[in-house]
Image (cartoon, rainbow, N blue to C red):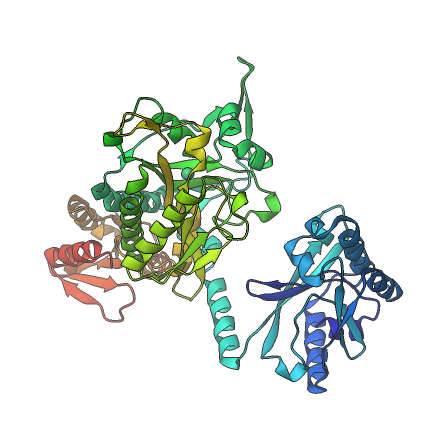
Length: 579
Ligand code: ZN
């Protein structure tokens, strides 16, 4: 792509061109913004280039040779990266930038035809080795992510081994766009934003709140048998809490600060709940017999983000966590983790989302980076691996992925269109008990530190909802639908019967609504269809006079003729089955 761009725009200056999760991008500077038309021309030029089947030839240069070469080529951005690497080492570069460079000792370049690029590699040997590709989109991006720097044009593309994989991917992206939760969320009347409230601060309407509560209740139903108890904490705390926990040093820039005119204490809006929960644990002496202590709370945390990164419900500044913390003895970790896994398993089964599990363990080459000592780490990593083995899941250990405070299991769920989302997590923590000096008295009467386990099932309620909306394309199963039965009177004279029917349904625990707007019945039916209500009952003269009800089931072509009790049974069964 870069070679094609250089042919079309000989003055083009290149930034970085890394591989990303889905495909690749290249930041370029052509002195103006790019257009759809440019993208077509670049694609055409790429095809032309590939048909000549040029080779990609690697060459290793010394740092100074490389700087000289890119100076001669007028590639000032590349020169800047090389200078940084030379003077400050790899740590001065982002992950993406490092892909363009080698190390301080030697820099590699690749030549293809008349084009020379700086790249760590490896590359395919010749253009005919490149699978089917497509340039997908472009956007603006500041050089090195800094808005004081020049704006570059970022062109994205994807490449696959086979045409079928490329087609599948493009279909998936099309489908994702149609299901965009920001669009559906407004159509379904689930949440809203207001400029005078602030960006990244969603508000949930009655329908959206209904769904949040249903999700919360479902998780609680699954958790209850495992002995969890609910706790409640305030949304602010003194800075000292986070200085003790260590979050202050790490996240200071992401915290919302709150000051008081009545005291000198400085507060922050809580960015997480764990530190508060440790203080409930520490509020009284604990003995080995009291453990495990299991606290759970669905509550909001607040983290600041650059407003440019906020996106619908996927990325917000007020984040509801379905949080739980277990404080237990070392010999109890296995059973606790198993219980947590059972909850996660049950939850995702209900949404028909298959799970993939990642086990993050230490980097065996750098044991000094981790807190807690070799023995406890071995125990904890072993426990997580054993639990996964016991339930028949192949969780490959990922070395070096663990946090410094403990190993973890991450659960990646696959949605209806094949996208993967990292949602649930189970994390063992040796750090916070140490920092807050948590204790219990063991069988010998000595003080010992409990192990803390953090776990989330949904991840965050907001992000999970955004995923669910797109997973179901807004057509939620009956148990989760904010309105389960929409009653549609044909004319005003059918309103009284419709209201009685709604009341009867409500009395049976079914969420029903009457649409008594003075609109045509056709319009009201289309409205209910747009809202994707699972069941619709159209009430006309016949129905009002006691004949069976005409029921439309979402997704079914034929209408059903049902007595009221049969309708109630049908809906209640669907709710009970979570189908
Ligand atoms: Zn936590």
